[in-house]
Amino acid sequence: MKLPVNFDALIEEAYKLDLYKKLILQLNKDFLLANVDLDFHEEILPSSLKLILHETVYKLIQEKFTEYLNLLYIIDVSEVQVKELHGNDILKLSEDVSFLILKREWQKVWFKNKYS
Image (tube, rainbow, N blue to C red; front, side, top):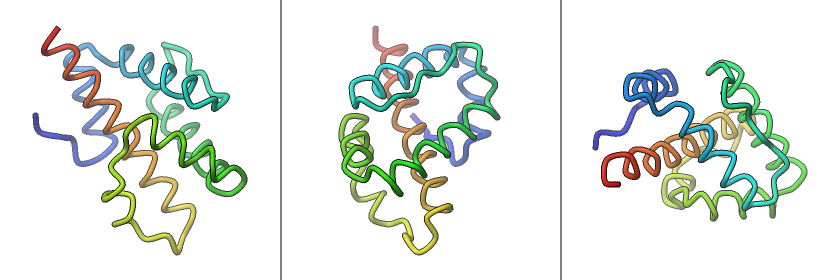
């Protein structure tokens, strides 16, 4: 599996394989497990998904850091990849972490689809 390098490539691949809705469902499932109050509608536009996810991660970093760490743990975002990001600019950091979250969720959906 070759992982997408940016948000647009990830969404394009999800649509191409008809897995976009499953990606949204996986996000909803993991956010619920992490007790983060966020529930995406299955028909959400990719641009809205990106914006809301970014905004949520930003708020978690700023206001609820423990919940943010718990979310990353539940989603199983690579700690090494998170540590490689630069934390100087929280806006940029939250954008990068949002992509890492989507990328990890995409891996889960892709593997479930391929091997089930």
